[in-house]
Amino acid sequence: MRWQDDTEVGSWIRDRLGGWSDGMHAVVPHGFEAYARVFHRASVRSASGPAVTTEAWRALPDDGFERLRAQTRDEPATWATTAEAFGTTLHPLAQWNRIVRTPEGEDWHHRRAPDGRLFTAPIEGDLPPEELAPVAEHLVVHTTTPDDGVAGVWEGWGGLLGGHMSTARVLLAADDDDPAAGPHAEMLARSFHDPFNNPYPKAVWQDGILSREISEGARLELPQRNHVLFAAPPRAFADPSWVLSAPWRDPSTGPGAGAEAHGLPPTAQHPSLIWPADRAWILVSEIDFDSTVVGGSAALVRALCADPRIEALPIAEGADLSWDADDVNR
Image (cartoon, rainbow, N blue to C red; front, side, top):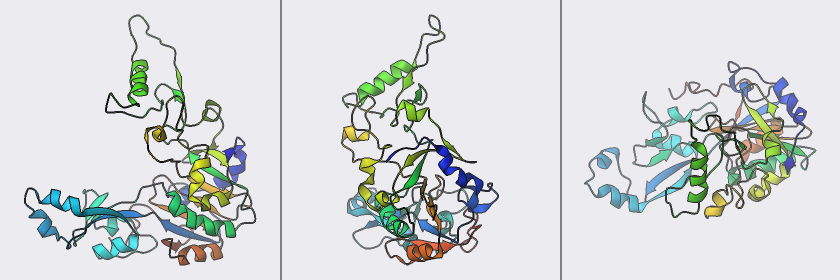
């Protein structure tokens, strides 16, 4: 994978987008034969003992919560499993807040089902590598250019791009003994200035994950989002280890070292856009969507929806995936 400075390679997307009033096509191009909605996994925290009803949960003694927490574990949860737990219906236009029966004004991120299990909403804009891999296996079959394509990463992810002071990237450290405390302290020191003796301090460039050349380079400018483009073979995403070769991977060494330098596993932000050179399909993970949309052939959509490893349903062109679109579970 490498930086793609010719952003005109993505101009076809801009030409096929609508506005926010055009359903999903504010971010997903018109004109494909079929579309599939791939639901991002949620998570559920369940007890290893008997199920705990809502009434029993409320009646727990002071130390009851701690005892239960010791028995709990977090596991991936499909939308279908969640709908079953809440007595709702999974359908192509389902919305998470309706699936988990969220009362008006209450938190939809964490909802407790009648059987006591705690469900946590999917992460928006992110399809983890292990969930993207089976999707990509089908994508490479349905293109004539599986080794030639483009990935677009939204420019707004924190720490991705370098900038002057206010956009500096640094790993926050709560402990002064933490190795990250040094860069954090340095960043704070640079953030303050003497307004009397030095009222107009010179702006200082702070590196991000990407180089200064890329940070200041061209973007694919779409009506709602701008993206940094990379030449990326679609085949690469069929292997979860693609993060190791992604140019936008959080670095583990050097100035402003990222999370890997502090013992966390390698990470790379999920691309918001992936398409092959022949434009046979496009994968769109809008940063505010809790699902990914794939536009392509009818055969591709059938394959995605039939794969038991993938939770996906077909949606029609013009589908509305907005917050209020779920009339079935209203």
